[in-house]
Length: 252
Image 1: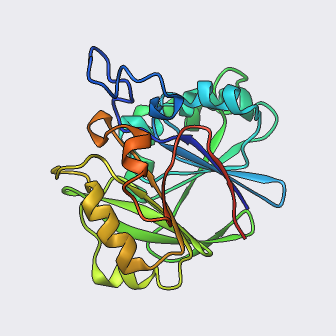
Image 2: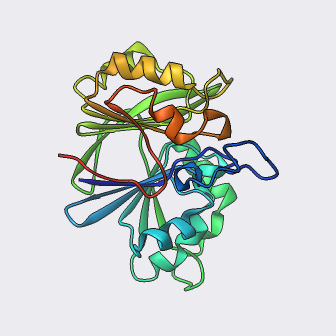
């Protein structure tokens, strides 16, 4: 399984528009962060988790021109705004989009033409598939949804075999933590150094990493208040890596 971190930033990206802090002005490419999205490649098939407003740029940068399925965590703009950009990828094959019922209704309202005007040649052709908290099969992978709270909004992370992907959350119940038992690889958000009403901070992320016990973890969904990549990486345990845009990782 190959992981490509297409984007590792939060909703405003890094640099943040109009900001002149040392992170936003950094010349280190690892401090340039587009909106968070992950590409998983296995058995010659591609699974995309979230599709933000930077998707077109990310796909061109990484040189891929096909996606076999899209899996959505929630319906905030920075996680779904790139769906329209997938139109060229659906000309010869409809794209299955997997999400919960709330997200499906949001997509039908906000991107109705993608799901109602199929076969026209100018609208993306996508088929919605709804999931709940039960595991399901997708591209020969077993997907276990993990219920999270993004402040007051219920959303989902995912366990995919020995990999877990958790972004945009403040709370995870003990019941959901149990579903992560045995996870060896963890991708988890780490917005900034201090607390936030809708996202976990780096100290909270490190605490959860310790509880989950993965052998390797990557931090994602960071804003400019997270700090400079190289400086923060030097402070972290060996098994915790700050992900950056374009990072590729091979896992068993």
